[in-house]
Image (cartoon, one colour):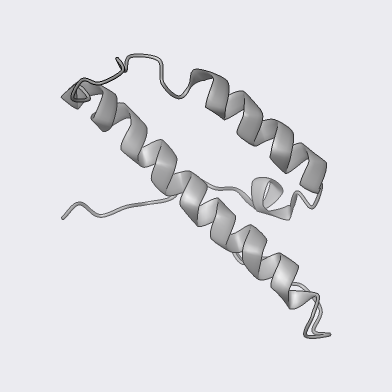
Length: 82
């Protein structure tokens, strides 16, 4: 199994604009299937290029979810990357 190193920055994680998150997701969705053909096995080159991006997005989603949930605890939010 490969070791994953995320490429997130404090600035990316600190973005608290939920509308911007939606716009970011929409922009990614418009181009994420470039190189894929419906009802065919995904080419290895497509997987090699896409997996790190997806892992990065999952990590970012985790940080954003933690930030949203921290509001319900009453604890002050902190940067997860520091």
